[in-house]
Structure formats: C-alpha cells, structure tokens
Image (tube, rainbow, N blue to C red; front, side, top):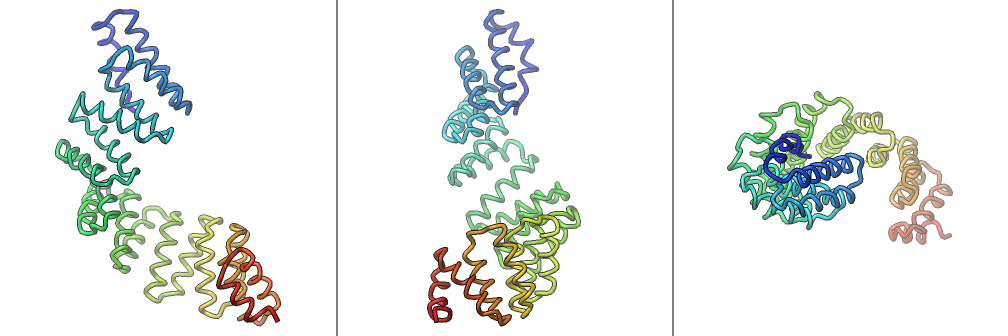
Amino acid sequence: MKRSYLILFTILLLICAKTNCQTVDALFVSAFTKYQSNDFAGAVSDYTQVIALKADYSDAYFNRAISYEKLNQDKNAIVDYSKVLSLNPKDVNALLNRALVYARMDKDKSALLDLNAALEIKPDFFTLYYQRGLIYQKSGLDSLAFKDFTKFIASYPNNIAGRMALANLYDQMEEYDMAIKTYTALIALDSTNSKAYFNRAFDYDLISKPDVAILDYTKAIHFDAKYADAYYNRAFIHNEMNEFDEAIADYTWVIALEPLSSDAYFNRGIAKLNAGRKHQSCEDIGKAAELGDKAAQKFYVNNCNQ
C-alpha cells in the first residue's frame, strides 16, 4: 500500500484550511491503520470520507482500491484505479494493479493494454514482464510468454515464481526435458519446494523415468506431508510397477487426506485385487461406487456382486 501521505502531510497543511486538513490526514491515517488490522470495510469507509473532503486525493483512491480488492469487490477497485489514472495517467502502480484485477476478472485484453502502457512508461519495471508473461501463457501465446519470462529471469535470476512460470510454460509446450532442467534450477534455489519436486516427478514419468519420478514424489511428500496428489501419483506408479503394497499404502494416505476421493478407493481396490486380496478389493470398490464413481459401480456389478 502506498504511504505517500507521510510526505504530503506538510504540504496539505499549507494548501487547505487547518481543520479540514487535520481531518483529512486523521482519516487517512485511520484508514491505513484499519487496513493493517484487516478491517478492510472500515478502511473503505474512511478513505471514502477522505475523498469526500478532497476529491483529487490520488492516494486515497489508490488505497481504497486495494481495500476493495481485499473485499473481493473488483469492479469497485477498477473504478478507483481508473480515477487514479485520470488524475495521473503515468501512475505505473495503478496500471499494474488494475491489470492484475482485469486478469483476475478474465479480461485479459484490458490487462494487456494496461501492462503494455506501464512498460512504455517504465520499461525497466521487470515485474510487468512477469505479469504479462502469465497472461500470454494463459492465452496460449507461448512464444510471447517465453520472451517475457526469460527477460524477467535475466533480471531476477533467483526469483522462484519466475522460474516456476517458465517451467510451467515448458510443460504447456510439451518440452519436458527443458521443464525438468528449469525445475532443477528452481530446486537448486529452493530445495524445499514441494511443488517443484511434484511437477518434475510428473515430467519424469512422462518421459518414462518412473524410478526417478518416485524419488521426486517422495521428496514432495517429505516437504509437504499432506500433499494428496503426490501420494496419488506415486501410488499409480507403484501399481504400474507391480509394487502393490506400496501402492495400497499411498492410496490409504490419499483417503486419509481426502475421505471422499472415489478414485483413491477404486484404485486401492484394484491394487488389492492385483495383490490377491479380492474381498478387501470389493470393499474399496463398493465404497467408490457409493461415492458415485460410475466405473466402480460397473466393476462392482461385474466382479463383486456375486
């Protein structure tokens, strides 16, 4: 949140009536304090009073917009950021913030217009390249996204989010070897990043390296013991490798974390069947059928309802 009111305090006292200025300043400070205390509605109320007293107070509109965002009132935030830009068309922060709100509202064209305008004003504001890259990626403009992500990383080589975005882009482009290299570079920067291990494991499995994939899924679980998807994917590989006890153990973890996962019950049932435990298998598949899994319902009728 902008804090330029600290700079404006003396100026405000000189350019308007003393009582009014003290009221504006007190309300601004009150609004900022409420924001810091997570009283976003209270902050909006105070900023609104500030604006009523000083209609051209750009910082008040900017801060109220941020407060509106916290209240999930994106349309109101857009109105306030637009007001800031009407007062100062070259406010790069307002352009960036409005772009992020537009992107959240799936108004990608409007978001790109704001990001491009911001980059024209401040081409060395490299965060803009990262944000624009995300929108390009979302829009399927892979080559443009790649240029923006690489430019961002060149300026911030240790930024985790940037490398994750680039790795995800490689995945989207089905360049799995490059994705793996990028995840590896990310892990070198953040050795506890469970998502990076998970994604790299997924890619290793895609390029037919299940043993390495298992190691990465295990790492992901080590750093996030409640990572249900990691247990699930590791179980799937164990089952394919005829390691049924290991698969059953992993599916059991998934069920403990997600008790309504019909897929986990069904697949654990198949693993138990492969392990020669038909009665227990049918119990699991029956549970999956109860949870609405149509494949489990059909399997149960054909194999267990006898």
